[in-house]
Length: 53
Image (cartoon, rainbow, N blue to C red):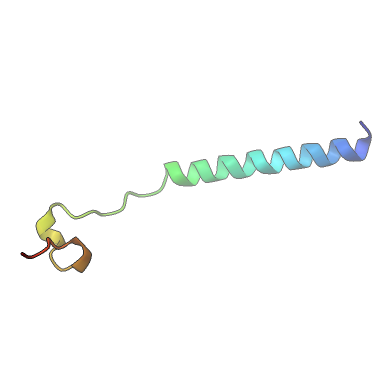
């Protein structure tokens, strides 16, 4: 393997590893999204309303 191939391979591997670590960090440290406590809190959202008979 010549030098230029080795440099490209190591650069690509370090870039992919760095991006993977960065996005894992972002996912694991993201604040939790607020969710409604019950179905009663969702009454104003049309797609979550119970079908009427």
